[in-house]
Amino acid sequence: MCIAIFKPKDTDLPTKDILQNCWTANDDGAGFAFAHDGKVYTKKGFMTFEAFMDAFNFNNQKYNFKECGMLIHFRIATHGGTCPAMTHPFPIHSDDGALCKTDYISDYAIVHNGIISLTSDKARKLTGMSDTAVFVQDYLAPLSQNRGWFKRECNLELIETLLGTSNKMAIINGKGEVIHTRGFEEDKGIFYSNKSYEDTYYRYGKYYDKNNTSGVDLDNYYDKGYQWDNVPNKTSQGFTVAENETKSVGLMKVEVGETIEYDGFSQLIDSSSTETYFIDKSGTVFITDESVNEADITNEKIHVYYYILGTNGKVYSLSTNEKEFKADIWCYKKQFPEM
Image (cartoon, rainbow, N blue to C red; front, side, top):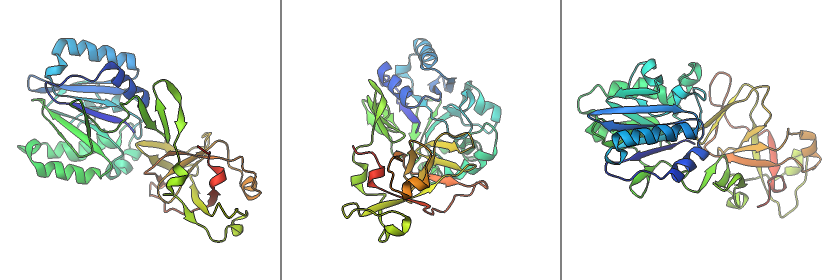
């Protein structure tokens, strides 16, 4: 998921409770950037909430963040691993070292929420570089060399096109001005890329609140029907279904050596994986509560359950090519937890 946040100048800061909510939902590292004296100061690589707040409070006292334009980011790792270097914000720079520094001064910095298909393949082939870092190197760094680029609306439109519609990005300059792609939501003058800053938030197919860290399964997802197809002759799949269960869903199993991506999360499936992942043709990603036994499914021993993890899913093969969806297992309502 990740959450990208920007605060305009002369706006109150997010409360500590809001920042805590952001961390709880996106806990693979955090950072912030702020404008001061014509430059952007980036502080990142905080791998605990306590370390983040210590640095945040120290710099707030020194620079008075209310007067500064600033970016804040809490990460869920996809490409590049879970490490300080790949936390956000990133300076706009073409050099690996600059992008990886946890304390840096530059002319511009960015935060991003999503997975960038344009650079995902290259990021998978590189060691320790995320899709965001590659995008900054290959696209934003050259673009920022053009005089007046930050104020040209056509450049922001180009960035939106390159990122794709499900991605959100904010960029700050040394004056504290922020440009951003569409999709940010304003709350008390602060802009958030999703709602994981709220007391109740969504992560990996479950709703959570800060007083219930175990989570609550998605409500009524079956009744929404968006991932279901009619299968006229289900007896040919090895089981029969009652008349009031006339809809079933085809799932594709994600095999060892393949990578599954969804909602800002990426998982390489290896032989040590304890979970079994599936995807349907709409991109909804499921996980089972135990290893799938096809014989039990055929014999209608319905103790294999499928839980939604997220949406916007894709599966990549060993050659890093996106796999065409082909259902290799069919499930029906009894195999999904009732709400």
